[in-house]
Image (cartoon, rainbow, N blue to C red; front, top):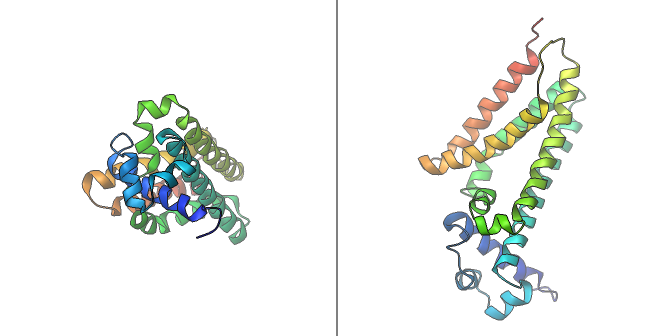
Length: 206
């Protein structure tokens, strides 16, 4: 283990994330996190001042990974094509093609678990999630604006709302997958989203 205790902190966060996603934050006790992470109460409180501090750290880490996933996909499409329309379509295709791996790694989204807890929303964790949502919105809206600028169309598209729809599709697909106990819904929903965006960007109404 590194001398700075990084591995222990990450092990606690990994265990807490699994428990919160599966059971909710209120039903996840510090004692259960300690047991699941194979650490001690002393180690827990060395890294986190309280259960609320743990929640904020969980959201910080999850949001950072979320934004990193966004930037990785953008970098990949930028390296693949110079066409703004194809960049948008390929961006969604990357999300679609990684859906199975995502669902194998986690059964739901930490954002959903956190936002249903009023106590956490009052203490600022929702602000951390909002920053991630805005990062996705700004990036995707910019890509959509560039794509639509090349299209001979008179359609008025709210690209911020369309960008948000990508986020909404993710969250809704997590809920649908858990409700139906079928992880394939994530990929199916992203496939439909890609097809709709293709229809929007590749059709040319007068």
